[in-house]
Image (cartoon, rainbow, N blue to C red; front, side, top):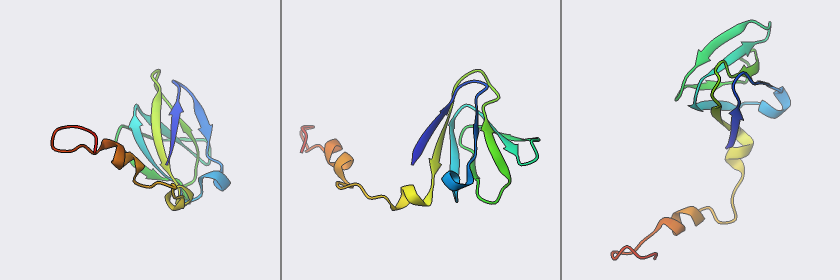
Length: 101
C-alpha cells in the first residue's frame, strides 16, 4: 500500500502504467476526481473508496487548503511479501504482566 499526501490545491496525474488496477481510499481530507475530458468529477471524503482502472479518471486533486491523504493499493503492493510478515505483530505482543513477550 502506498500513501499519497496531496497538499491543498495540489493535483497528481493518474498514469495508467503506474496506477493499473489501483484502488484508493481517502484517509484524510477530500479528493476530487478529474475526468478524462478535463471536467471535474465527484469530490470524495474521508473513508470513500474508488477504483481507477477503466474509470476515465486522469488526475486526483485536493480541492481544499488542508493536506489530503490517500491510501493506494495495487495488485503489486498486495503480492509483495515482507521477509518478516509478522514482525509488527511480534513487537506489539506482551505477556500477562504487560512486559514484551
